[in-house]
Length: 133
Image 1 (cartoon, rainbow, N blue to C red):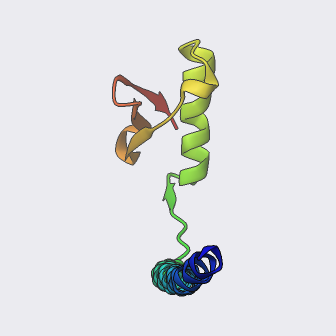
Image 2 (tube, helix red, strand yellow):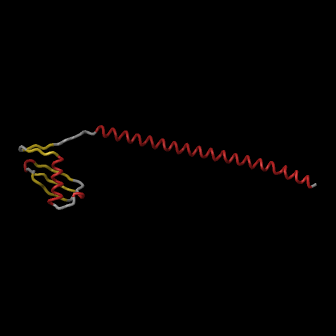
Image 3 (cartoon, helix red, strand yellow):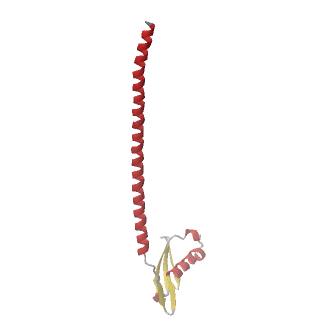
């Protein structure tokens, strides 16, 4: 009878082992499918992000290409000043006349009145004054 019990146990173990192996294969297949799905979603997200970046870059290049180079000169009473020259004078006033740090010079608005031979300035939205031109 001992031999019959061993055979019965062996018979019972084989189907259980086979079922466990099939379950493991099914789980592995499910994991691979999930991994492929996740990889596909990640790839799709990266592609979408790349397309958006390319579109933004193309739009920025178009805007740069459409930008017009401009140069403004003011002529009066035999004198001529460009905007760059007037801004440089305003920076010099900021640094030397007002004794301020040049690194603090962030923004300047200039108003030129040729009939008075003056340029009025507003520096950093707070400091106002004028200089002769």
